[in-house]
Length: 252
Image (tube, rainbow, N blue to C red):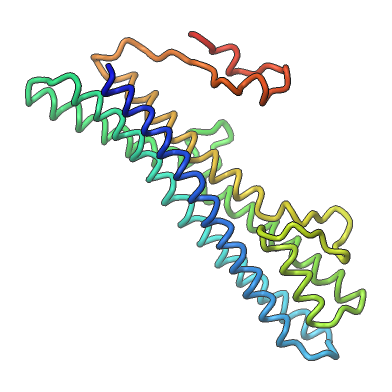
């Protein structure tokens, strides 16, 4: 089983690399949004009118739509890459079996088909109890982002900020690389949080698809007796003494 164990370990390393790459790319998406909106703000005349605010609202709406499509493309890409990592682990198990060619081909086809089906189910929302599709989840995130950006703009305009100050505050708020909380944010607006929901959705999506590809393939694989759940070494520390469903599954 050493070859399969090595494949599992390598898959874990690949998952970590994928997760870091995913995070960096998401940060770049939001950083670009911050730069683009700041550039639009700097075009404003110093004597702003209601018309300018309406125009800015339209611009924010447009950038929010672009953000939605960027997030959708990004998340879907990483879901597929995560599924591929886990699929290769399952195929390495087939390599180890050294089956008769006809059976080998059938099992490999089954693994790739199930992996593809699992990705489609996750994107379509069939994996989750609330049945919300990936598109609906991302649209909710970008809708909240748009509302908060609008709030930051309106609050700062009402306080008489000039275009450069407003652009700076917007940059602080949207760009996840910034860790400085602006002084002109509305109550309840947290500069650390605008990309948080997108980051969490992206991270959990690749985790879920890797787990589900493994589970669904184990169910149909005639050479598999079952799966055993093992807690990670840092589980207890992460839970701070509390328990969850992972503890219930430990060793089963």
